Image (cartoon, rainbow, N blue to C red; front, side, top):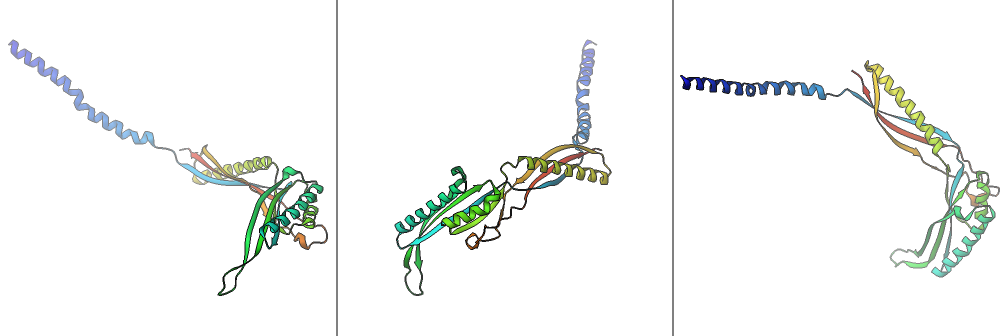
Length: 247
């Protein structure tokens, strides 16, 4: 009898021990079934917008140079130096500070004549010296061009108008871009019949870029002050935003 009782108690213990093990898979299946619902995300709107303002420039960068040709390299460089020295003096007389003048290119190249069925023949050497000048008084831009041409400049590559400090215009463009983005997001949410949630991400691109503009007349051809039109500059900011849509 004692032996039978021991076997009965052991069997009961095993049954109790086995019972939780057999119920684990069902619990695991319930948790697995609920996991996708817990991890699902609400729909989003990925939109882009831009803001743009027009502003008048308050500076200009003038690009010009002196090109000389002579039989020898030394003569070409010496003539170019004399001519460029006169140009620098003309800039000083026009009120341009030294810090606003920067050399952008200095080159010396051999020049050849090419005749069919003959070897190239050396004609001489060409020296060129190019500078970039920042002009902050746009009213004097035309007379400055005339001054340097009269002093020896024989190559004008163009003028770029710009802003000394574009931050105020950029901030205004940012505000316009955000307003446009908010309005677009609200319109999409209304069309979809969903309440618009908060913005989740915002990315900016673009900004102020100076625009090159050709001058109205070639300085070498002008007898009066060279006419130059500054016009307006575009300051544009592009943004991309991600909004949530409530369920």
